[in-house]
Amino acid sequence: MEITVSGRHFEVSEKVRERVASVIQAEFGDLSLKIVSAQAVLDMQDSKRAKVSLVLNIKHHTVTAEVEDFDLFKAVDSAIAKASVQTKKLIDKRNTGKQGEMFTDVEENDVDEKE
Image (cartoon, rainbow, N blue to C red):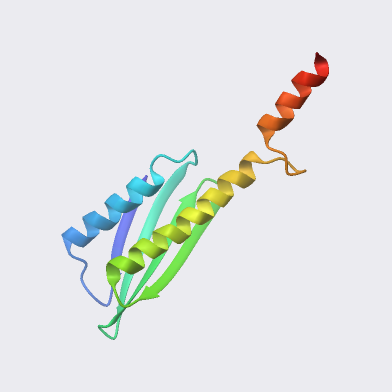
């Protein structure tokens, strides 16, 4: 997964860049989805507020999360939490059939009916 961390209206230090990249890798690295790239844009507004925009490019899908807070790291954590909820919903949607049954439940019912 390619991770890009950039800053708007300020220069992102290497320490912040590494922390954001490591948190993104830890949260989304072991999912069953094929995540192509992740882009985090850190924006400082009026030197008091931090706005974080996180975009995950997943095969056939895009997940976006934006958070604004007074603390930069708190905003990063909140954006990652929002994107995590969206990816989990995407995984559940992919694993669920049209009638709301899990694919594993359907397969078990087919085996029971054959016996």
